[in-house]
Image 1 (cartoon, one colour):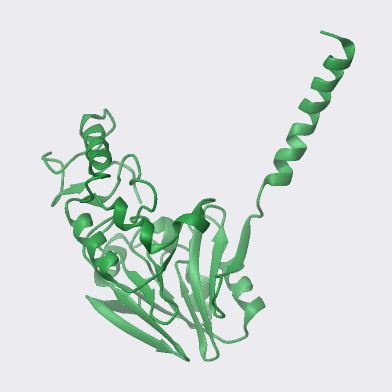
Image 2 (tube, rainbow, N blue to C red; image 1 turned 90 degrees about the vertical axis):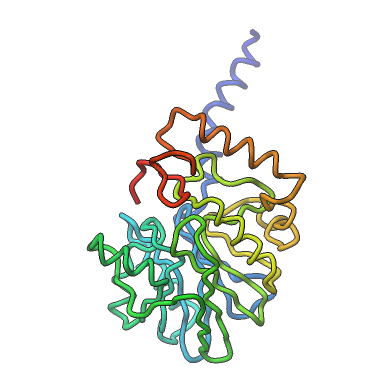
Length: 278
């Protein structure tokens, strides 16, 4: 190797860590949803939550504060946008990676809302870092604050038995967490998934009047895949994608990892279970 080529390689290797650091996103960030004046996404590392700002107050969702101070940053980001009080915090479902860390919201007087199954689970497990909901939803509830209407809809079991679909009627936006695949198939292990209930839930969501889905996990392809039209072809009942779902379920049942399918005696009510604690 010539001396000049060697020096070029050394220089490139030395510059790579600097380039990698330059591409690292900030720890947290807030983004206004395109085309909306009052809907925002708060991201902390690899989790996201939606919040809605009205003159009468703010409706926030998941604190995403498990073992990290996300709620403090979340509140500070909201307060950069409005001085209106945070009226509500709504839990998307009962998994702690999304709902832990809400005490700073409680300290400001926010009312916590969740599905009734989430509240029952939280009360049973007694996690000190998870705020017990003040109010619960059974099948459906409509919340009105200022000029905003937010529907909280329970479509049945999917990634949990307590997942809510939050629909902003005027904006035609939904926020629901960890169970709707857009231009993809479900997570490899499909942990904490109820079968075949999830199929029924997907069909109910497809039938709703909405155009965009806000994700709970940031995705670089979201700009092209967040639209409703990408969901229907990915339903497990679609002939094009059904083989992909069948292969995924086959790989789960044949996997040496501690998962169980609906045919296993370790399955509870058709739910795929793992030893991963939440």
